[in-house]
Length: 311
Image 1 (cartoon, one colour):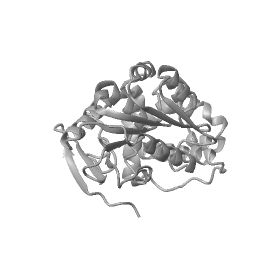
Image 2: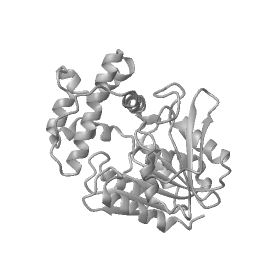
Image 3: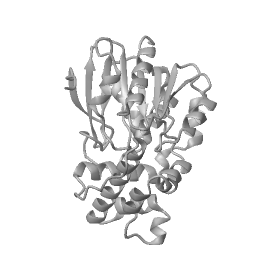
Image 4: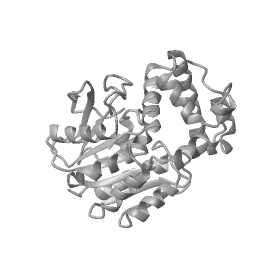
């Protein structure tokens, strides 16, 4: 059973979006905020397992258009700078002076972007399975990774033209952002099944038969947001993110990365470490990408405990 929130609220941003924000743990304890991945995945209560709720105040929120935030799937007024502003708005609204910032995958990207503008409000930084928003990563995930998940990739591109197969991300984004409702739902199902095949490969499982069900509204919203962000290079660049990292030597930073992460390649962690050599890079042997991986979860718990007294 997940812990109960001591406070839940809906926070209007002033431009049409309303953020779902929940707080757990002790109201007067040192604070931490968790930035979820995706973009568009929404927060998961399971992340609370990384924290000592008897000693910490943990803030979870759904980013614009995701999870319980509304309007669901909305891409207007939704970009990286708006999300950075939202994080700072939440901190000010909750009257938190400084906090631990924990981000995984896209959440690690967002954590770096937030740190680039508000490092004075961060007590410590934990980055898991970091994503650097590069064309290199997009090419890897949507094209080159086919060599490791051939069945999943074949299902992803089934019925597509040769041109579409050679530009998977562009094809999915076109379907989700400019296609009919039917095309968008089809793209969401394909993308989700492909992600599941990759996750299965990381866990050492054979790809199973695909779910033939239709896309739920939540699934459609998730991949619509991902299409919006990825087609815009997440409104940043690898160079910008590494430049931000190079300016964070004054902060306690721990990076956690699985050696077998097929989603965000392990070289991402090495690139970040080269930019920020004062950070600790903790490899998880045979670890994958998802925090549900026991090794990744254990490493995150250890990182939080090692930084819990930073204020």
